[in-house]
Image 1 (cartoon, one colour):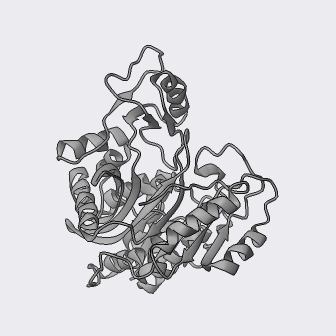
Image 2 (cartoon, helix red, strand yellow):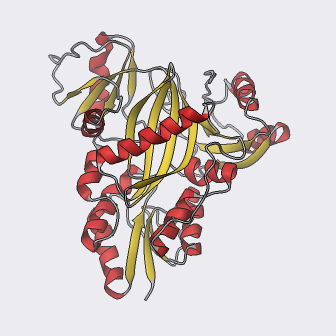
Length: 404
């Protein structure tokens, strides 16, 4: 009898996770909305099913479970989580229930649950009516306006004045039936990932992240190890574990988005999945040599996580950067060669579908690709970011935010 994994997604960036699933001894059934997904041939079987097709994915898992044993389902984005919850429920698998997943994906409900458990979260309100008559109460600008259940930075706007809230709310309503308005905390983004094993939290990665300039806030780059003390790193992991507990996440992956400001953390959200492959399957593996995804698959296949002694800091300083072009017909091969001539370029990926540039980047939908660089020392990262911003500001959307 085969031990089957339903792997939602088979993109270029998911080739690693597909391979790790096979290394863990599982029969891998991959799905993707793209019938020509680059990773489809790595899997044992492939089906052209979109990650949001919940009924189709549950039916697929049930068919395999009728003759073999489906031991789990996996995805690397919010879009497939509803299907994973339904598969867990239908087959009686360890992992989050549909209720827990829905609660964690609904930003307002998740924030309320964390706040009730003593976790610091941004002050905010939820708007359910597009009418101009709504108010923002005693919230202090600047503010962040976001859909309550969207992802990929879609519909997220930074506003400096209460007078700018209404058009931002209308933009957010394009992606959700409810909109959240929160006070903006201008700190450093901190990303954490871990795995829950029957309620016990095991840390697996932490890094810093920088965002684009206002009015839109989408991720531009990040790195590990974070420029934080070991005490602060421990605190970030502890908050991630507490957030998971508050949301009812007791088994499987968890990721948290935090803001570090004036020595304290504020938790923006926590979700029962890992951060995307750029962070989890690439940067953390390049830095520590440990794959959270591979270990999670081993837990699925063998019933327990491998024993590891995790350092609070990763082994090698590694940075990822997103490519948001600001000019048409950018020669990405030339860009790669330029970077490679001066730095330890590990990997460079450009989406083959990318064909045109935009000067009005709003979210991840205009993303062209990524690259990853290894450094000898942590303090070299800030120097690279400054030099890169000065050199490529006319060609790429960059950020010169200081991390210290």
